[in-house]
Length: 557
Image 1 (cartoon, one colour):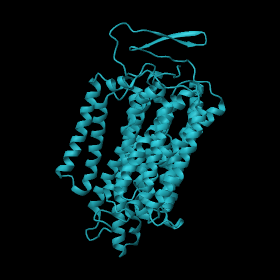
Image 2 (cartoon, one colour; image 1 turned 180 degrees about the horizontal axis):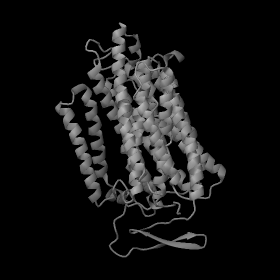
Image 3 (tube, one colour; image 1 turned 30 degrees about the horizontal axis):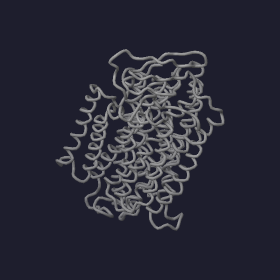
Image 4 (tube, helix red, strand yellow; image 1 turned 60 degrees about the horizontal axis):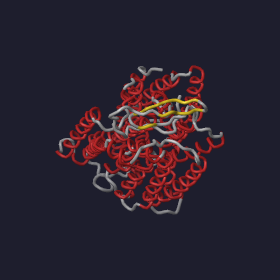
C-alpha cells in the first residue's frame, strides 16, 4: 500500500492534452503515477520514524484530540447551571453545544483541501491556535451570546484538530501497524466521554472553590486546562514531527484552489444545516405552526437537497471524493457514522440532564452518576481495538471491524431501549446498569468505522476522505442535539402541569431545584413530565440505531 508524501487533490483542471507522468522512487525502483495535469510523488513506505518519535507524536496528538472531543461533551453536566447563571432560554441551552459542533462540522471540507496547499502540520498547528483562542474567549464570556460565539470559534479549531490528527497519524505509521498505534487515539476519544461530563460538573460546582459564578468556573476550566495542554501538545508535535514532510501536493496554488474548490456546495451545506437547526430551536418559542418555524424547517432540507444535486453535477471539486460513493462499504460506513453520533450526543447530553433534573443532583454529582455510561464506552473501546488488531493481523481484512460495529450497535440498541424505561421513580442501581449497557455499545463504534472507511480509500483520497468522514460524523452529532432538543421541548410543554410557574426567565427552568418543589404532588407531576420528555429522546434513538445495525450487515471485507 502507498503511504502519502504528496496527496493528489482535485484542485486542478483536466488536461487538454496528454498528461505527463513522473517517476516515483523507492530505493532503486521507480513507479509512474499521473493525476490530471499534475505530477505527484508517492513513497511505498511510511516515513521512517523511530518508535520514540512515533510515541511522542501520538501523545501530542492524543492530548489535542482529547481537548477537541471533550469540548463537545464538557458542557453536558454544567450546561443547566450555565444557562441558569446567564439567564439563558431553553433554545439557547441547546445552542451552547450546537454552536461548537456546527462550526466543527461546516469547516471539515476545507481542512483536507487546504492541507494539500500548506501541509498537514500547518493546518494542525493553526487549528490548535484557533481552538485555544476560542477557549480563552469562552472563559471570559459575560453573556450567553458571547459564550455561544466563542464556542463557535473553538469549534472551527476543534474540527481542524480532529481531522488533521487522524490523517497525520495514518500517514506516518506503516499500514500493517496502524491498528496498533490507532488504539491510543481510539481510547482517547472514548476517554473524552468520561472526562467531559465529569470535568464539566467539577468546574461548575460552586462548593469546591471561592469563585462566585458558573461563568468564572468556565473561565478557570478553559484557561487553566485547555491552554496549557494545547501548549504542551504543540511543543511535542513540533519537535517529534520536525523534518517530516507530508500532505502537500506539488504544483498546487491558491489560484487553483480558488478556481476548483466547491465554495457554493459548502455554502449550501452550511446554510441548509444552519436553517434546519435554527428552525428546530424556534419550535419552543414560536410553535410548529409559526411561519418562521415552518419556513426554516422546509427551506433548510430543500437547500440540502439542492446542494446534493449540485454536488453530483458540479465541475468543481465536490465536498466528498467520488470514491466515497463508489463503494457500498464506504456508503454504509457514512450512514452508520451519522446515525451512531446522532444517538451518542443526544444520549450524553440528556442523560446528564436526567440526573440533574429528576434526581436533583449537582453538576458534579451528575458527572459521577454518568461514570457507568462514560466508563462503559471508554473501556469497551479498548478490547474492541485489541480484537480488531488481532483479527486484522490474522486475516488481513476488515472482518473484525465489521463484527465489532454490528455487535456494538446491537448492544447500544438494547441499552437505549433500557434507558427508555427509566422514570422519576427508578432505583439508583438501575440508573447505573442501564447507562452502562448503553455506554458499552456506543464505545465499540468510536474507531472501527473509520478504520474500515480509511482502508477502503486509496492514499490519494485519504485527506479529502477523512474530512468527508468527520463531516458526516459531526453532522450527525449536530443534528442529533437539535432533534433531541426539539423532542424534549415538545414533550415537556405538553405534559408540564398548567399551574406550574417556570422559575427564572419566561423560558428557563432551574433544573436542579425541581426536587424542591412543593407540594409533593406537584413535584412528582413536574418530574414525571421531565423524565417523560427525556425518555422520549432515548426511545427515538433505539430505532435509529436499529437501522444502523441493518446497514452494517452490508459492509464488505
